[in-house]
Amino acid sequence: MSPLTKLISITSLLLGTTITVTSNHWMMAWTGLEINTLAIIPLISKPHHPRAIEAATKYFLVQAAASALLLFSSMINAQSTGQWDITQLTHPPSQLLLTTAIATKLGLTPFHFWFPEVLQGSSLITALLLSTAMKLPPTSLLLLTSHSLNPTLLITMSIMSIALGGWMGLNQTQTRKIMAFSSISHLGWMTIIIIYNPKLTLLAFLIYTLMTTSIFLTMNTTNTLKLPTLMSSWTKAPTLNTTLMLTLLSLAGLPPLTGFLPKWLIIQELTKQEMTTTATIISMLSLLGLFFYLRLAYCSTITLPPNPSNKMKQWSTKKPTNILTPMLTSMSTLLLPLSPMILTTT
Image (cartoon, rainbow, N blue to C red; front, side, top):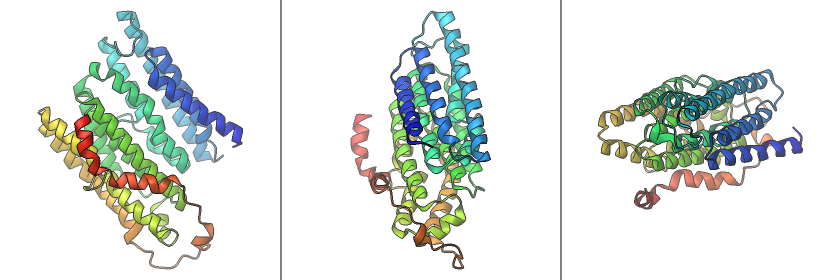
């Protein structure tokens, strides 16, 4: 891909995200989402591989259908109420259609089918964009309309996402698919609390973005696409693999690491809302995810391959470590002491 094309795509991504996040009118929000979709497609199809083309096609079709649903929802609401304001979503069929559209864009269960396949067909950096930056515009729309959405539907979809994200990640050997199911599971945690405390959803999204960025940049440095490669990458960058293990445990939500903070606060808030059963269910379901995070951590640091590799020497193919990786890894593991300050602000 030429530098000019890459510059146009990245600038369009930033423009589309900014338009959607800052808009009050449904048409502007839809325009921003469409700009985002069109800007990411060249980045997905960049490798010129059949799997990449397939991923780009699937992504385009799913996102176009979700955008059409969102536009249809806003038009029905405008016809019934005379309002194009995003916060004035009061028509019940429009609320249902909007929930379906945003769930499809985010990859929430049962509209998750496209996300692991698209991530598997993308490069690691594009997969990082799809898992983090592309989730921001739909999440911002969900935050703006959270007061008028159906709580039962959202909670059901959230529990299903946490269960499916943990269950489907158990038998995966491709790191991008594992991160895709991890993303689905974390989106369930964010969505379940959005009606009761939107600030917690934003906090969970920011911390998830921080940890996921750190993991993808580390895997990009060691060129880790599957578990056997992860097992043999210890000789390439031992320090980097050790920090990867800590970041994976943080993503699993183990104390005293940063990832424990959003889960702790979400469970606490659900208990305050007298939803102890729901809090217990999602806590138990998160153990499924913990298993494959522990397996990744085990492969990255504790396991060494039984035989020396016959391939080219690992240190001859080493990429330079991204300058952001150490800073993001530190933040992904050491932010828990800031929780008193966060608690006072939320």
